[in-house]
Image 1 (cartoon, one colour):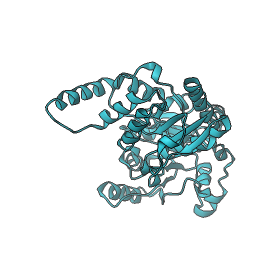
Image 2 (cartoon, helix red, strand yellow):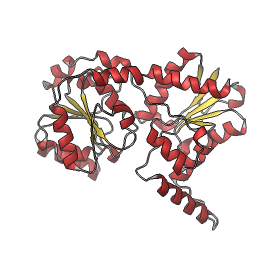
Image 3 (tube, one colour):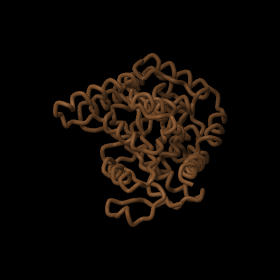
Length: 343
């Protein structure tokens, strides 16, 4: 089976979860009888002889390619990679209002409208969490038989990490670690920095800040806290990043939401305890193994962090992830859905 893969061009500049999911899926899918083809903007899809197309991201960047694939009658799979703190009822109302307003000539389409349209065109939507699946089904009114939850994954190499390299360079261990897009407001790093002096350990932030008001506020808070070490963004393949995970005692994602936070799974494979937002479907992955926090509450965050710091080392979460959430397992589940619909 030959499968064409599409991802938005923006992943060339932003090394986030969408890029990781697309790259890892396409790299592992060939082990399950699938011939992957990475579609470029210069390709003529009609000449590629594809059995199906899998698109990553229900974004406006992918509207044109989705419409072309549907016009050609090629089966379409979509990983929406979508979440909102707005509930399904709010999304339905927003879409209804937008539809009514379009009667009077408004050509403006909301992000909800774009995502809803793309999800409706897909033969099968592959959300990463049950919460995402619920929003797609109830918010966008997509039939349940057009939705199959496929989890996000993690590279097994993180299970072999050691703290030596980070310890040699920075001289600290058993700290609280955040690694990711620190400048993105959704990641809520500012909340972590606001309570850093209440944490019973050093805090390390791996990520870069922009020269805007938000970034300057974060940098000011880090300086005032006195126990914060800032490290510029590290490449995902960096041995220093892997070592930082292993050197940490607790890894934290205080985000407004995560679906589910690939970095948290990476850190967990190195033995770090996890403190993570309760929003976005994170409990599908970490229920029973992590401290869940309300990202709007400083008290919730500081309590979660200090509780995690008191925990004894355990292999339970590591084993749970290795059993259920490796990219090999994700690729296998994805290939099963391709064959189910297209065999």
